[in-house]
Amino acid sequence: METLIDSTIEVQQLFSQQKNYAKKLRKTTTQDRIAKLKKLEKLILQYQNQLVEAIYKDFGKPAAETVATEVLPTITEIRHTIKNLKSWLKPKNVSPTLPLLGTTSKVYVEPKGVTLIIAPWNYPFQLAMNPLVSAIAAGNCAIIKPSELTPHTSALLAQLVKELATAEEIAVVEGGVEVSTALLDLPFDHIFFTGSPAVGKIVMRAAAKHLTSVTLELGGKSPVVIDETADLQDTAQKLLWGKCVNAGQTCIAPDYVLVQESVKQPFLEALKKQLDIFYNPQQQGTEQSASLARIVNTKHFQRIGGLIDDAVQRGATVAYGGKRNESSRFIEPTVLTDVNYDMTVMQDEIFGTVLPVLTYKKLDDALAAIDQLPKPLAMYIFSQSQKNIDYLIKHSTAGGTCVNDCLIHIAHPDLPFGGVNNSGIGRSHGYAGFLEFCNQRAVLQQRVGWTSIKLLYPPYTNKVDKLLKLMLDWL
Ligand code: NAD
Image (cartoon, rainbow, N blue to C red; front, side, top):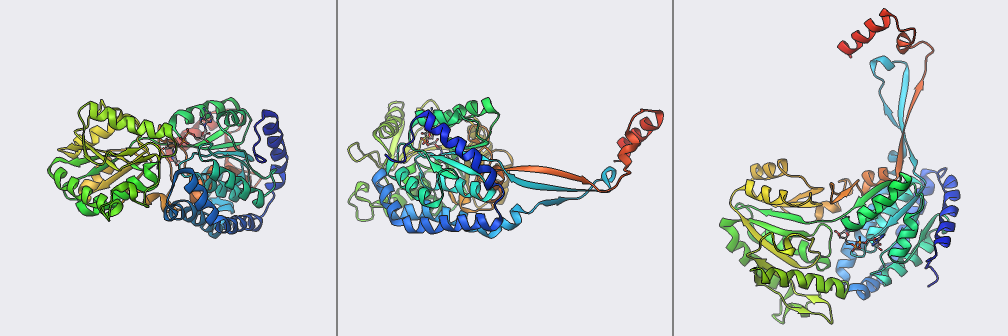
């Protein structure tokens, strides 16, 4: 393939070219960067139909889902960035403190330089493009390494980027682990990685060799807490959409449910009813649904099937679904009850349309259950009680939280998106994402010759000691 650069030497050459070009790029104006973003927007809209086709070939994703979850978020990110870039790039004034009277201070944002964007397969377009928008806005060069598991989309991405810029500015390098490893060996100025916590650790180790800064957008098990005040039909509808979009292969997909014991049965009934409304409206079986994507490959199909089998073997009940077809990599949305924490389904991120439902009596029991697992990327709360909502937020932690809805907190460009510890480091989207690609340079300028700081200069007489004491007491 023409765009495949699989030798370490070629990757190094590309990196050196970008390193040189980065010096030119840092001088670009707001208007230059906006022009590049507008070109990107135009190309994405031009490529939209091809993208829908490519992702369908990769994992059978319905066209409407591709437009809603790949094209729309990227276009939103571009437009939001274009609208705000002038103010983001403007140096921010900082008022002087008392001892620093006579000085002016500003925070300048400057590009980091040459950046690496490593993307996963599950949203193979937007998770490469959105960080690219931030990289362009901040004035960086970028090398994008898309996932090898979605080859049609990765090839399309490479084609689009070739039309956007020369390789010395932005390049796509296709390939798998070996290419990723060769890239990670280089002294990038920033690495923006989206993927699993396991590979995130490899990325961070590699970055440490050059003290390269990292943004790690990782995954994990995102819990859903439903209390007895929740509107159960509305909850079931929103939760199922969040779980089943992209066939559950979403980093912030609701992973498992903790429902208050008193409403477990009506909740399960609401869930079953909604499953039929969404995916079995003609009663021909969910496999006939044109609204469900497929699992990306056989390895993941077998992994998810294994989670169901392991849970059933250990005593779980399939309350809904359970059908599978390996040849089409179809897994029916499957609701599991009688689940416990010994089951693999409650240990690993599910990343598929399997929904374990557990119960709790008191809110503190739900919080204790969430606490057993690493800090999640997202937490969902369904409740009509503001007191309960506030209590749950105050006594838990998560990268982000959505109350009485699912996934949509990711859609707000002014809400920083990211994880905490195991679910990630750093933030993406909007201004927060832009800042990840910037060095925030603090600049203080002295305006006067004599300043009070001079009173602290040597020799360190009693006068200096007294002044220091005064400062400690009064500043
Ligand atoms: P992955 O970690 O397997 O792969 C991600 C990227 O890393 C790919 O480009 C891959 O080629 C590369 N890679 C894989 N192994 C590598 C290695 N040993 N050394 C160097 N590079 C390597 O992740 P995935 O399976 O593509 O994506 C699924 C994971 O990503 C899930 O955990 C999901 O939650 C997470 N995710 C997070 C977000 C987020 O925004 N936080 C978004 C989407 C997906």
